[in-house]
Amino acid sequence: CNGLSANSTIETCNGCNCFDGGWMDQHRHAYPNQPLMHTEDWGWFQPWGQALAIRTTEDLGYSVAGWFAAGGAYHAYYMWHGGNHYGLTGGSGMTTWYSNDVVLHGDGTPNEP
Image 1 (cartoon, rainbow, N blue to C red):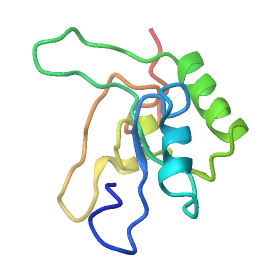
Image 2 (cartoon, rainbow, N blue to C red):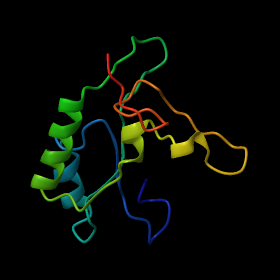
Image 3 (cartoon, helix red, strand yellow):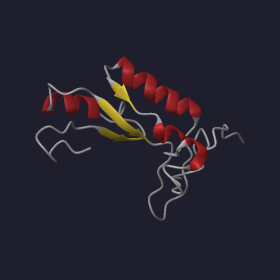
């Protein structure tokens, strides 16, 4: 997601909230001809040794609404459900499961208290 990787690579944002953190303004200044793309909207992020942070549905909704209201062109939802592939497989015999503490479990059921 680093636009410096190749000349044709688009710089994108990964994080819990690319709307409030100032990323959009920085991107517009540095890359005025590139679209605003939010490729990983983390449902959770836990740095080593820190407490588990569980993101609420309201916080995710606020972030996505703010993103598009401020001119965002693209938002990927796969991290919204923990980066999981439905059916719990990414290919034959291969599972992908980033987190089960996100808004939607990998099997499609809502994460409710």
